[in-house]
Amino acid sequence: MNGAQGLRERISLRTKAAIDRLKFKPKRSGAAEANVLAISDLHLGQDLRRGVKRAPVPHQDGPLAALLDHHATRWEEGRPWRLVIAGDMVDFIRMTVTPEPTEVVPFDVTPAERLGGLYPEPAKAVWKLAKVIERHRIFFTRLASFIAAGNELVIIRGNHDQEWSLPRVQEVLQSALVEFALPLRASGPEARAERERQRQAFVARIQFCDWFYLEPGRLYVEHGHLHDEFSSVADFDRPRGAPVLHESVSTRALRLFGNRHDGLDMNDLEQWSLWDFVRWASKSGELGGILRDYLGMTARLLSYSLRASVKTMAKSLRRLARFSRALAVDDGRVEKLRAMLRGVREDHEALAPDLLGLLQPPAEESVLACAQMLYVDRVLLGFAVAGGITSCAASSLALHWRAGGLALVVMVALGLNYLLSRGREIDSHPKLLRAAHRVAVLFGVDYVVMGHSHRAIDQEVADGTRYINLGTWLAPSRDEQGVLSFPHLVVVGQNAVLRRWYEERRESVVA
Image (cartoon, rainbow, N blue to C red; front, side, top):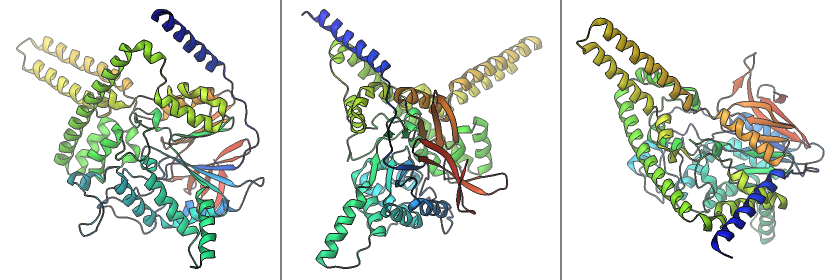
């Protein structure tokens, strides 16, 4: 068999496999093993920032504790609850507190970390998690009681808590929950043996997911940040225990800018325009520092993006040069994803390439995307407009010619601004909506659940499939009477309902 014929046969096999995947129709699931209680975007530890006045008790703790107490022993249809936290449970990114100079820690703190927060290294992540557990002791104590009552916990990684991929961080959480739920009351060998048996059974009910949680035919849950190029990372499947985690463009921007200005509310930035930033900067009283940090962040991120873009282009060229050989070799990421899907249901492993194809390439691989995120394109347009206006005003041409030139500059600037606005999609909500539709078609589940966008919604995205976003517990919403409520999803059997927990009434109500 010559090389050309072999290449044609491999392409034919690949094409047939792709067609077979398109014909794949997952079967609806049977009886569920557990009912599901899902929440997202708790952002625990978000207020652990230097110079920030903190309330004695975090606002999330009381409602979360009450929600868990309410469900802990109220099992529906005789099945326990599986609490799925769909990402951003802990906000490792926004924490800017660092060890005191007199505190003995197994790591060094750089000047940059004093300003923007500790880097995502194992020892530093463990220190931050310990601070979060101490700050939210009420919640973690009730969470331990919830698991001890026979329920389960599933934690999905989000873009603010990638540190869950570090084994040591997982162990710290497990150990803390065990201590809360199973305090050692006796020191005899029999008591220790019994406690060890209980500890193993307790830890077995805690699961960590790197990307998604899937119940075939019924439920698919992920955080959603991997469909947002500004929060996505290229190495979401990096080996566990890697010394330093890869950070997305938005995370780097937070460290270089957002974390250095405590007066900047980072929760609504996706909806901000350039003029919102200008108004905030002008009112802050630290315009010089803001401008310095913005220019420094812009230079570093664009430089980083340029390097990443060159590496990506070089990798693509190498793959193109080895085109025939690449067709016969499966990508390592596809194999890892196949193993994950095989662990859920064997016939799902064929969906791995298609699922991987749903992910957005990280914005770091596009200098233009980074420039749009940082408003560099608008700043350059502003300078160009200012230059054009100055040229028209200083021209020696007749007044009507200068007026015409000025009008032309304004019209061109407005047109370019419109085009740039259409190309700048920072808001994650429409991206998650599109991704939910594709996931629904791919897996054929009844419900696709995400977080990340902080918008609690429930709507149909495909025939028989509903997209549910879990919203956030970071900033509770109020109803028409001004009563605080918190979104959560309750799945019993094949029925899922987006509900709200009303703290004052201690009850769960359909949203």
